[in-house]
Every structure is written in structure tokens, then in C-alpha cells.
Length: 62
Image (cartoon, rainbow, N blue to C red; front, side):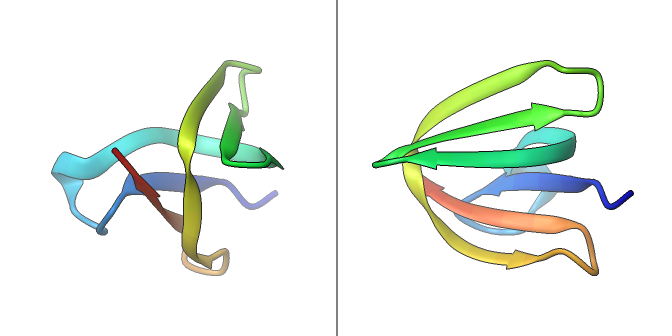
């Protein structure tokens, strides 16, 4: 199982939105992240990049 950390705007520790994300769903400009425990977080933004091998995703958000 590959889990990812979601970063806001840049891959820096201070920009972590959530950790251990197992799934990402997109609906227009709404991104919903669900972690391994089933906790969900929804933001308004867009995907910038994803490196699933290294386990991180960068999103552009306000």
C-alpha cells in the first residue's frame, strides 16, 4: 500500500495538509483526501504534481 503526504504549494514541512493519504478524489476544483483511517479532508485547489513512489503530492490552494 502506498500512502502519501499532501503539501500545500511546496514540499516543505510547514505546508503539510495531511499525511498517510490513501485516496484522492477530484470534483471540479474540490480535492478530497482520505487517509488510511478513513478521515477525509476537502480543499479548493488543483493538483500541481504527484510523486507516488516517493509518497508526496503537491496541490495549489489558498
